Length: 128
Image (cartoon, rainbow, N blue to C red):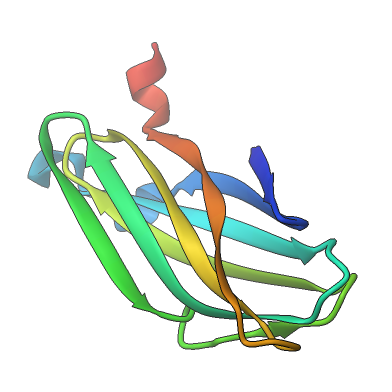
């Protein structure tokens, strides 16, 4: 589990390898990640978009951008939490992700970025 806080917004990431959806013989390794976003600031905020950098140890870096997270652009009042689960496919079974969310302060419409802490994805049998 990794955690980072930016401007009062705490982001925590937990990852899990999904062997039932993976096929190592075909260089297909599936991981899920659970993200918890906690609004510890004094402002109501809305998550507008995400930007990911995906590093797969033996393949070129990929970048992914898009609106919201899993089809939602949640609004978080002070003290509220939003959690979601998504996934990532790797070809090597060893990689990491990092990125940021673009948020908006509802009161004044100002945008700011919130760091998503870097996290690793490692197939358990590669640890031996």
